[in-house]
Length: 230
Figure (cartoon, rainbow, N blue to C red):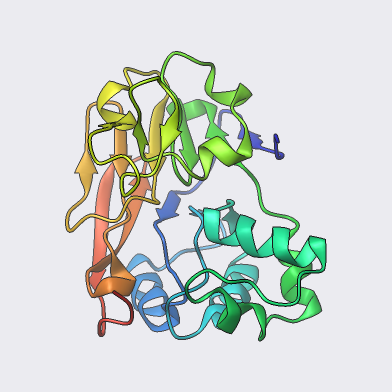
C-alpha cells in the first residue's frame, strides 16, 4: 500500500524542524517547541508515532494541527487507523485501546491526512517514520515498509529488531542520496550516520525528545519529564 507523500522544491524560506516520536508526551513536545521557537516561516515535520504509550495523545494531535505541521504516518497511527476503518471495536496491541477510545471524529479525520514521506529537494533530504530498504527507489516503497522497517533479515525483507535480533539495521546499509531523517527505532542516543539520522531517542521511555534542524544540520533535545512506558 502506497500512501501520499509530499515534495518541497527549492527556495524554501525559514527552517525545517523535524521532530522524532512524541508518543503522547505533550508536555515534552511543548518543552521542545519552547526551545525551538518556530515561526510562521518554519516548517515543522513530525515523524510519526505522535500517539500511544504516553499520557496525552489527543493533545499532541491538537498541537500538531495548531502548528500546521507536516505529519507522517507512524506504525502506531497506521495500526489504529486500520482498526478504525475496519470497524473493529477494540484494538489489542499495547496501549492502543486507551488511545482508540478517546479519539474524536476530528482526530480520525486528521489521521486520514498523514503522509508516508516528505522530500525536501533543496537539501536532498527525505523524512520518514521507519526507513527504507536499500537498493530500491525510496519513493516506490509501500507504507507497510516505510513505517515498519528497523532491520533487514537474512532474505532481504524488512523486520522489527525484536523479531530479528540478528538483522542488520537498514541505516547501516543506506548509502544515499537522499539523506534520510527517521524515527521508529528508539535508542538512548541519536543514531547519526553519513546518510541518515535516527532521532527517536525514547522520550516516552524516559529518554529525550529530539529535533533535527535544517539548514543548520543540528540537533536540539529536551529530557523526558518522567518515564511513561517500558
